[in-house]
Image (cartoon, rainbow over the protein chains, first blue to last red):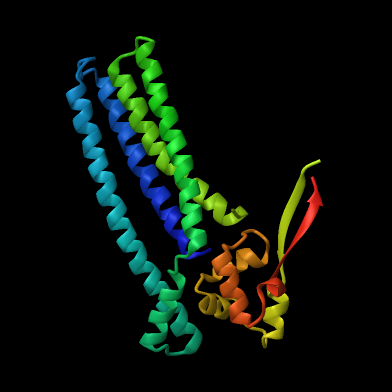
Length: 165
Length: 74
């Protein structure tokens, strides 16, 4: 499995965990009845909180992933050669992380998948409002579809890496 | 009936004749990743013209000796 695929899987897992955590909290808020039906402020605060958590988690997990990847490459090289020079290990890590035109193309194509899903969610949210649903429902549909869009972007990326573009 | 164009390549053969050059070595010479070279070799990715020229340059041959295309009746 290539470096890009591993990185994509890490992003998918992070995104899925944050989305699941949001859904659990949102469901809890809704079930408890503590939120007034039109209390958009609380929902906005909750969503902003999860956007922040998502960004921080993505950064932290990517840093941890890069550290673990570098360590695993160093260990593999040391086991193979007995003792591997630091320079060689550095070179190998660099080679693993090369990004070229195919990665960019796959990134663009999978971005499109994410945008389509987010767009469908946006329209779905507007439709729900037009059908007299509460603005809270619309807000949640949009938030979840944007998060799901980013998840599916990752799945699309994996698909393109495996099946080709 | 629509015609289908399929890009084919001789990278595997050229690597063999280049003293069994590895995909990694070719990737470094052409400025791409090993995965991209593998994808091109197996027909999963058609490279840009620039990368195609760089690959041909790595083998020191004309681009036509590396890449070709087949016309198929769809």
